[in-house]
Length: 475
Image (cartoon, rainbow, N blue to C red; front, side, top):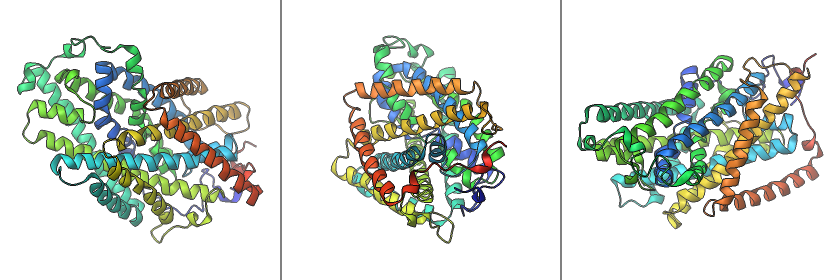
């Protein structure tokens, strides 16, 4: 990136994107990014493993996610660009890390898209058990692909309403659950009690170790929360919308994760939940509200489609960012007439189609396979955000770069804590035989990217040169 390409706000002036995401849409994308299939479907398996202590795991991970997002927020207000994670890795750690992070974030969303398509197909089977999972997954893939090709405004509007459904439904679930606890209506009212949190073998029924092993699934539930960073290049007013979106994260985690799980585990004892079944659907079936379970199933279907929609959006932008840096084919730089990276979206969707194949070949295992790989890729992305933040703060302290208008509380200290936590979760993944396979996949992915980087350097040595945004320097 040359200095001529950077305006006074630190944004690229020739990106060509339409700044079509307003404050209303960015806020709801940020809210919806914290509510996904990891909570609605994955929580069932984690409750079976950890019991009520899962609440603590979500709260603990939520604190770390807030550290990550405040670190990202400081970087975004220093230099808001589309493809932010790769750009910051490229600037502070070097071109190879920008290349590796961009492609790994692309992989994360492609694989997450597979997981969401799988989940959506499972939810549709609730109403239409005779329809094969792969058929449903394929239909959703094609429809969302069309939405993303039309315009960023349509993407933003669809994501707004997807998120609105999730938020409204979760608040409704919490209110109804509190009503059951307070007034004891429905059949669930006979057994609903706060004491359900510890009455069945204690708050940690299977030990602290088993609870910690759920952190892989818990971290998957938080994937996409960083999506607000990708919207920086297409937000109407990033200086105002991004800090507001990030600062609301703690109450979103407290309400939608910790709050919702606490209420549900009070209404229905943890021993009644099972892997592969949404605890929210199971809870409403227990309460006995007419069509309640069906309504909740529709909501969790919406959550899956929302995440897949976001995946298509982010992968296209990341491929374009990589192409701008010479780290992906130049054809990905082109925008369609509606100013969307159509080719990047198309290629990403074709790879997401592998999820359709998995639903055909191994429908019962497809979700578990792809979520573990997505989690490993997400952890890498978060680590790059945190390390870039630490290096940025060092540069600011040394007077080499200007201070951000949105500094992270605690400075680099919180980033160090978050880095240690993510490395601990990686250790847990390596320890668990079921999830360890994702590390093998990531090792293969790293080897492939290493070969790709060697080829890139041989063809274009300039790609390995560190390029800094000149107008961001002090003095």
